[in-house]
Length: 350
Ligand SMILES: [Zn+2]
Ligand SMILES: [Zn+2]
Image 1 (spheres, helix red, strand yellow):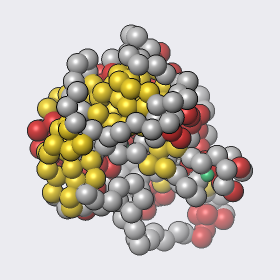
Image 2 (cartoon, helix red, strand yellow):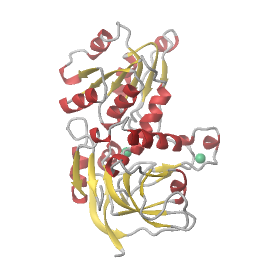
Image 3 (spheres, helix red, strand yellow):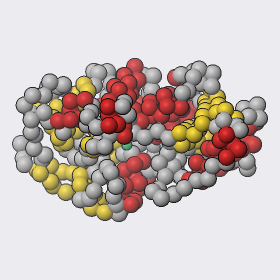
Image 4 (tube, helix red, strand yellow):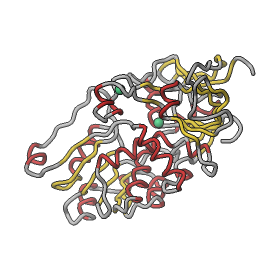
């Protein structure tokens, strides 16, 4: 085996180079995976524009965090998989030992270990992730769909945090890959989903994933009136905001009914704020919450949902590129295009 591999390296804002870099070594407890397929992600597109992410990645670093592939080498002591296994791994793992891990909020772990490097031929999964967040992929599930496990796990947690029940009217605001996953998960819980977004392909996908109503923001004069007209004048029982802009958070609060639950799921730029109407919060018993990241339990659940076909992976991966096409694909991500997620084809089975 050659000592180098091709990889997409993030250097700064709008600066990603495809280079030869050393193949990462394998230590005790670690697993080196030959990546079959990586996926582009809205977070990567954001990081590409900004050039860094305070917690996830500091350049220069091999970019990308959603991937699945085949185990190529295992370090001493690895029991979760063997050479030749098809696997998927999460992009992080909690320490299991800090205050937050001990009180059952491992997503807030004080020492969350992040893994980047999916846009490359090989990746070495650190021991901590290999031990709790690396799983064999069922034979019938294509690697490119298994690679959806991580973003889907964030959504599984989000839907759980929101308390979505059968019969609830849930408004999903924003139809990027995350919003579309929320639609699929809420519909699977037999909620009535009203999906709000832009572009025909995204709206049609939301409908195919089980949304009962789809609202095209570009064609609407008054979103508030449209949502209230579909909810007996009340607003959403449960709201899931999937855009991540303060003005959209504000809209999400307005579209939630008295006594309802509003999950402000989309991460906004650091330092931004919103204002809360005290009357709505107190006299109207509005519950407002945020959901961040995933936990090992949600990673397992997400993989199971993909394997069972409850969440149909094919709906979320609608383009493919080679490693040389990663930058172009990241530039095409966003609400204004038809690209949901691109499969970055690396090697062998994808
Ligand atoms: Zn992602
Ligand atoms: Zn911890």
